Image (cartoon, rainbow, N blue to C red; front, side):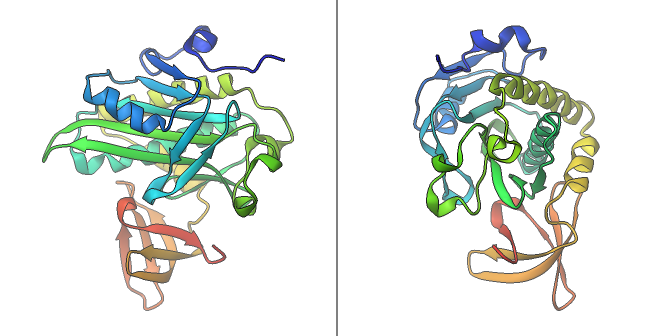
Length: 268
């Protein structure tokens, strides 16, 4: 049986977005879609351009982690954005993307959760990671690249043994084969709606509501891991600007910025 592919010609007739995903660079195999996206963005690729590959040989996650990306088994993609916002506000886009992916997965009848700032989890296992990278000057964003990796149709034996206890796929959890094209179109369409709302009104209430109501960590004890420390805290809230409010054992509180910290449950 011929493998389903994600070339633009395969899904353009099903896509209802105006600009998100209307310019597509498609690869059978690539080192990293984010790496390619940054090169294209630096050469002027327009907003909403999507880089998709059936396989990544050097997929990357946040804080230097790697991401396993086998051929035809997931959504391995990057989106180029050129938002007219202050660089400090770019982190908010990660929360918008997380809400969008949760919503699109939820439409499949699969109840995922969002682990701040950039993971989608299911049954305490990682299903999706989001990697946001930015090129900016002091007060101006040149471009933002949003990398999205979703384990869609991986079987259990296709996930490396050393991470099977912490990683999963939509197929494993739902026991059903997932239409990647339908999921891709849903993500691009929902993202255009949420992103336009954010740019037009600087309003991300819809996305924040989804992130709060479907959080994997709010109200729970977590580990806050920084370069030189690891402290136990309780996750209190996600603020309107996308930061995580935590309370430590001594009663002190801190607003965490995603670029500076990693968050884990007490069991890892």
